Image 1 (cartoon, rainbow, N blue to C red):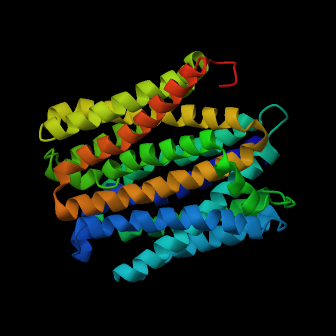
Image 2 (cartoon, helix red, strand yellow):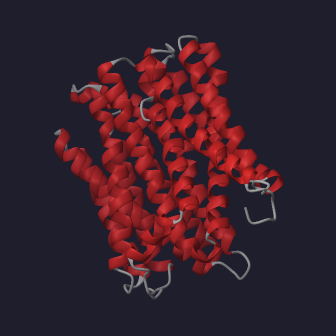
Length: 394
């Protein structure tokens, strides 16, 4: 098997992981109905997965730094497959969350190893493209995995979606055993050294912006299916289509964010992305009950929300170019913490208020990121520096 084909295999595995994380949002209302539990309670299945991913992954990667990457990948793919397959036999909410925690932890480890192996297998000068291919696999879950899961759950028991993920993981594992070469582990950077980066004020601000930005997205996306069904009054088939369109828009938004960052710098890109994101959520609150208006708003929301990711990553790299791997490890954990916080906050809003109040809380969250960005910009302006120009260290 050619190395390029092996990278595609790793990308497919990343797609399965992304689907496992995001799929709950697409079928949240159906799970709640089946288990006879409130929607906010089911939403915490997203929180459990994200926290296990964020907290467990760096610990496991650090503790197993000397273990052969292929062996580690095989083991945690088995854990991931088992955690999803066992869902077929579970009807207790507590045990379902236990399986979600195991799935989240194993998914995080597998994703990191997949990224590492992709860089190792790539030809000289093509490492970035190989890493991007794995990331695209994860992002493709929003485009294909979530809407497809919504369609499948309308035909059969939602548990079969997770069973399918388990089966596909085992099928991929056969190819991994046969095609992925053994790769030696490497010396890990101790967690205490990783945490030292947080003492850098500029880096910490970017992480805080990341947290509130992705929390704002998660507040809405974690409960998107019941929101569209009960507030926008969309039919089930229309929801599946809109989830697909939103997934496509999110990938386009990410690409546009990268393009604008290279062309204009990180700050103008973030300013535009945060502002449109915040404004769109405000319009959600005003026009959420109009399905026709929501079609346009959902696309704008997906485009603007995901345009910020590349700019935030660029800013982090520019602040610590010698610590890229650590920077991205912390960034990934912050994304997962933000996803978990958004799911929790959304659940609280629904319990004490209603679904139609979610956008206002999301707008407030992204507004925090916008204020932080404005603060950084004003400080730079006072010090006489121009902010975020491409090709300069900002």
